[in-house]
Image 1 (cartoon, rainbow, N blue to C red):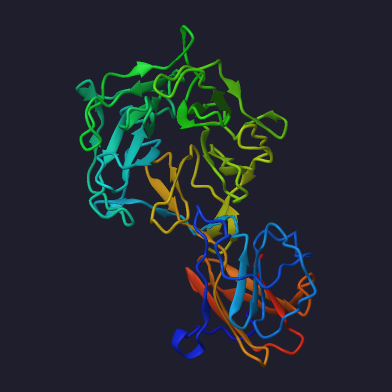
Image 2: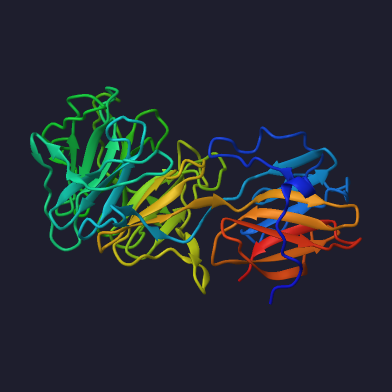
Length: 447
């Protein structure tokens, strides 16, 4: 049951304080003068936000609590600390020519500006023909539009890496040889090899040379089957290493012992998580991103069973991964649920709509690609009155409800003042009448 008064915050009438939330590169250090920080914030609710009524302050509590975004208000002053981990809105299918983009079966997406026009394009490996489809973006960088595709060629013929079962070529665009031009790596579904296709022309008009298999010493580099390559400097030595998922759900680390211009690889080792070999579930893909904003890169991965986050509790040069945690998104009628679009999910990670927050693409077994928009669960506007009333607005997602709690003490915000406030879509607004004892508010996703 929804209690309380849901209302839209009128910027002209209420003059709410509007907060600019941090982007991926800005971790809340460039903000307006802080007036105080807090200890004893709730640690058991990863989807909670806390704010203080701007007309009721308590100067005695100090020390920043890591993990929750905290808003503290006084006339003319505010502080925002620690933006939340990225959350996701419900999935939707990418479109091409006004219908669901469909490459056939077993789509493996990679987003890159393939022709250097400043707009993100889409490369998709697919099983039907064992080829790589290229969709050039006919829209804008922030709002991609796709129509038809062509198969990528190398050496004058279509790239073709046929595979049985659920195997498909896995593309990854990168400047592999550090010559300033984008090249292409493709993982082989059948034998687990990785091929390098060098761009012999320009970024505006890439021309790929015939593929060359990557090697470990004198032997072909292989992860057995279903190779999904990704380049990242995993050990922080300044050289790009090769990370690669495989058919068994592992993640492999091939350390670059060569140079930036001529990579060479040591024998592969399995990535570890929780003190054992990482296993995401069969048919794994891995990416790297600092999901929790602690300054240390984490591991993201997908598999037959879901999309996962392995937090890095180590350092930039010596990663230590914890066990995978399933990423979740809203499902109509069910609230937050682990992301699952069907078997053989293959992810890519990109800021699809250029809003400063990373988004998730998931290639599906039926040849479609699902898009999950990322957002920061955080307050965006707040208005307080001397009576204790408080109007608040926050980033939200459809198919969710929210609880609002209040208290006079920041360490024990447990008094429910509104339950199951329905989402307003990408933004939700709520006004609480308030009382003399309500000084701090806490927002959480309703179960």
